Image (cartoon, rainbow, N blue to C red; front, side, top):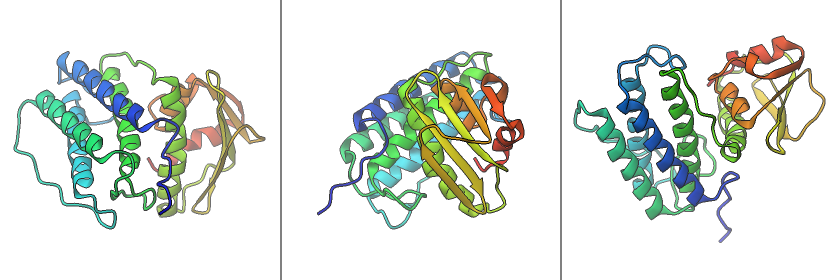
Length: 249
């Protein structure tokens, strides 16, 4: 039997630590108040954001417990609750228990069609939680950067999982040129082009129509349309970088 593929740059246990820590930080944000609007998630309040994360946790807990890689498991609706913070805490604990029981290599469905193991879920939930924690903080006018190593892995995941899958379903998506992203706080860079229903990409620096330079956290958050282009150093065809916001996310 061949070994299960390694998922991401971090160890499985590190992804679980991130989920636990970032979920707790998001809960702390919610304890400051649930009514403020979330500027990075239009039409959502902090309460909506937290309810969304809890729902996502419930969904992936069900997939882990089903251990069925061929099709998605049905998810039982949770009883209505006015206490979204308690629900978040409950679902985070449930998810972490499910991940711990599964370990990194248990079979598990995911929507990407590849890496159908529990390690994929651990990685996805780490990045989901970190970005949404940033969203919650933005409702209060702050935004703590995503930790560097996690952010580097997050850019990888944004490209190799999300864009590669989503662009196939959105063949009109295009940057109109090549783009290079370069980290200032880590030895990491990416070159990519999006056109004709394909993402062509590789790790490392290289010639491109536009080069974006920033911290790993800034590049990750830009890649998810959480910060504006102006936070980065831009060299070359700015319109190619600006076209990033037109890509599926």
